[in-house]
Length: 181
Image 1 (cartoon, helix red, strand yellow):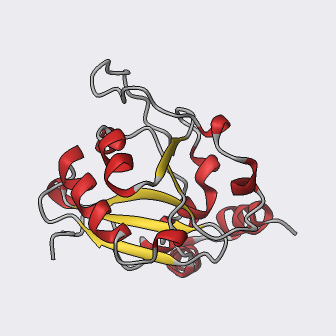
Image 2 (image 1 turned 30 degrees about the horizontal axis):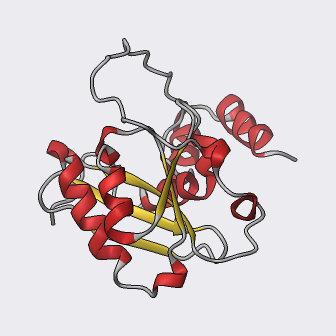
């Protein structure tokens, strides 16, 4: 039985008070899925010279060697954020605060500080999405020696471990939470 079957039975069968009770038991707490909001593409904020995920070494894909990470930001209220890093082999999670906002410089500084907490051999590569916050990826690579790879646009499944972790963290940091605290 798939998760899709379970959700469909909850959405179709529940009525009235029973329906509300069932919806509150779901991890997201929502009775219906939210429709995708289409936004007009903006031309600003492009990442200069990204190294795409297709150029990443094959050893990253099989998760046999530790040291390859996936990263993203967990956004909160008023441009506050927490950075999340997940190691692909061990699934070890590191969170780092962004007290100065989610600008490219603030993310680079916080990420550099976080990388220095663990030994060098545990930092070989980092895979990120196409967000503007990694615009200073080249300087980050020079400072730390960590290769940065970018997913294809609108392809979050290429960093599946990090996306799943962010979904689990949303239980503790729901949308609208002030992440600066």
